[in-house]
Length: 341
Image 1 (spheres, one colour):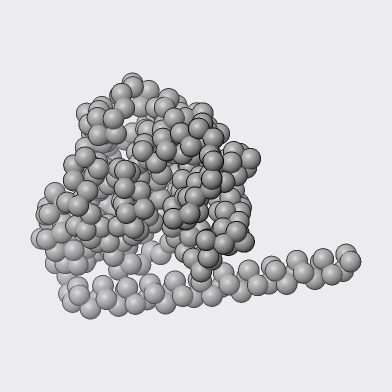
Image 2: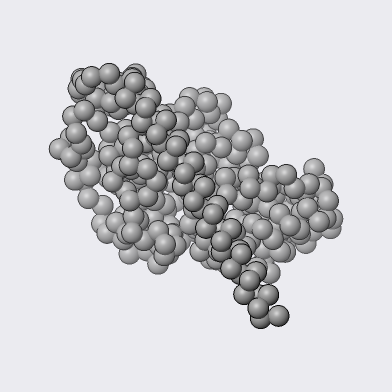
């Protein structure tokens, strides 16, 4: 790996501190990852940016760049800043360029520069990252950041699937949402033992909501920081931790914790949907500490498989629509610039 030469000690120290103190909150979306982020943001030493989705929306879209060349690295570096800034993740550009100039010329190096600049902009000495999509990249991230810790936010799959279907974003089909929870468990199976208890910690949503202090004290011990009472009043935090466009589905984190969400699925979820979830996930439910109700329905396997196929078709259609809109927007911009010229 090539690195920039002659780094200043302060910048090098901050980059090293970022890597050494870094932690990732992973887990299926709608498991309480934002709630946990909100509580950690109430700690005076910690900052966590809005979801960067760095591996999926930054690295993967420009993975063909040759970062060993100056041109390739500069293009990757600048795209990372512009992409994140456009999605409401704001940090000082000059600080970022300073960190990026001395970081490893790799995608993990750029990501480290992003997080170091964000932490410096916020005045924090410890930075974490929370993007549920990074659950699918955890095996890569653990290799790219060998000192980072992982916090897996876990919640009853029936509650997660119900929440995802009603969230107002993504798909409301049951099959793809079952797959999301299953992938989080598959991630657990792949990395938990490899990382060990020193780098991998599960926070169960139900435990966090019922007894915040006990769950947060255990988490703080895992992260190596002192517990502070402010974490119990996350609704009073100064930094929301999410951008304005996410307000509709994250605004509950500005309210005190409520326990009614724990068992709401038992009243609000259709019995057939409960049966589909349980039939699809099988013993994964018990292995992760939950119990099946024994609900049954007709042809659960084929119905979930069909739902998953429809989800793929829906995703392909939405992607095509976004592509057309992007192309039309670009054409209009070029036409406008041409007329102005």
